[in-house]
Image 1 (cartoon, rainbow, N blue to C red):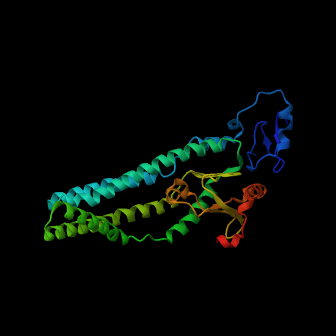
Image 2: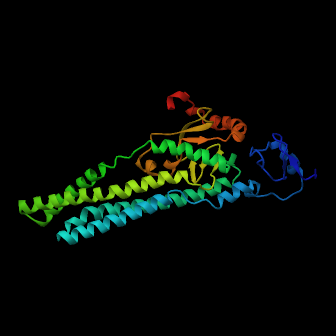
Image 3: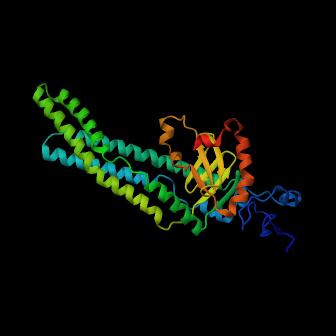
Length: 324
């Protein structure tokens, strides 16, 4: 073996002098293996040069989170405006445009909110993956990733959103808009009542029209989980987590506990703090999963790492069963 090479103490695989993670098993190499490098008269390398090539390549190629959500909200905004414009043209009442228009503008601002949040989250996640703050990281193999996606597909498929609430929600908004329009444009009680009726019906119709696209969007998003996709990356730090495309900084989004469980499959259970405000619930980090499946080859490395995370959060140590 060349003098510049070293071996992993866990699997005996050959490693380059600057490697921090084993190329074979993915475990963090012990600090002692860097002893000769600390005394060698070599130039200091930036942290990114010590990252596994596989992790570095992933950090430079993954898409920002919530990109699909932003596109969906933008499409719904356009649909609301088109429906409102058509209803106003057919009825001759400009009030028919108010309810769908307001809803469309709301969708548009939500799309911008998620896009900006996703872009910032991707930037910070890429920086974390290439830093020396990572304790353990891995990229699923295609077979492991297919098993992960099948597991979450079965969980998501059992949940059914309340599509019937859309006409009621939009009808209520149309009712309020009709009341405001009737009070502003006319002093006649009959005309005001007509304005309220038109606004309510327009909102309810708009909500009914949205049921089909929302259902189809939800159905396609679930079915996409069954299609082949590039394997995801997982990285765990003392106070930071990364999964697939979402970066979670526990300093800004507190974590109550992280547990290592073996059933039904080996996984990490991430319990996020539930006392956040409305802005935190709308944050892109709300997409971070509460369950991270661990491939069998990474279980020893995760078991070695997990005490460091728990020690860093001694104040939040609590009974595991209370979070199930």
